[in-house]
Length: 100
Image (cartoon, rainbow, N blue to C red; front, side, top):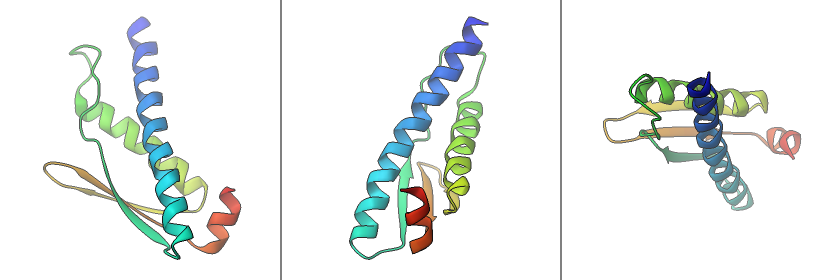
């Protein structure tokens, strides 16, 4: 139970950090007249022990990020590379108004 709760905290913190960085990047790009961005997001996350693999953490964190963005009508794509993951996000003016 403790491990499960600790993993939930790790996943929530990593998701929050990525979303905070995305929010800032989206605002800057939108203010510059752009309607898309590409952002490198982490591929390695803090592991509590050997019971949960980094791939499992990636899956949970990426899923949370994508779900959050899609709920706000952003278009989201992930491109998996060997050394990083590229998050591609695009939006319309209505998406920005909806998420404010």
